[in-house]
Length: 206
Image 1 (cartoon, one colour):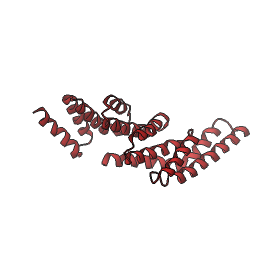
Image 2: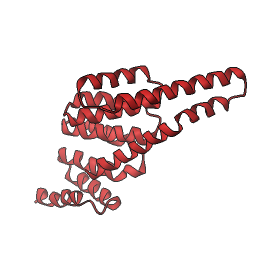
Image 3: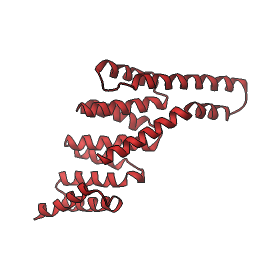
Image 4: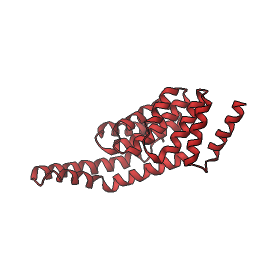
């Protein structure tokens, strides 16, 4: 799906950013507090930990979703590196593997972790978008709406409105669904599936 591909592009961009700049961010922040030897030593230790987490992240996430043993190793990595951004990225990858395997309860657990621990707004938003879709599929409509409304990035505006339209439609609130689909089309006029959803509302009303 086009929406999912767009989300994955953002995830890949953030993963590359952390790989290229994670250590520099840590030491820059620490040394910015002062030039004392103690802070420098602490910064160097933090950088060493960050580089270690980066290396382990690359190793454990290479084969996510291939087998249960691999996913267990990823889960162990997340537990051991909760303070690093890599744990969030690993959890997001595990959630995708769980969704692909239709293990939605496990996916929800991983996505909840991401939404609660990610420092990047876009990653939080991707987690909440995927949570909303899962809850909608499970007919947990209040939870789906809550997750959709937690998305704050304007870049996801069309996806949020479309999701809200789907939720309203599931609640038989066709007027609200029409308004949400129309708002989504304003930002994503080339989405033919969205146009079909809006057109289908006319037949429902009829």
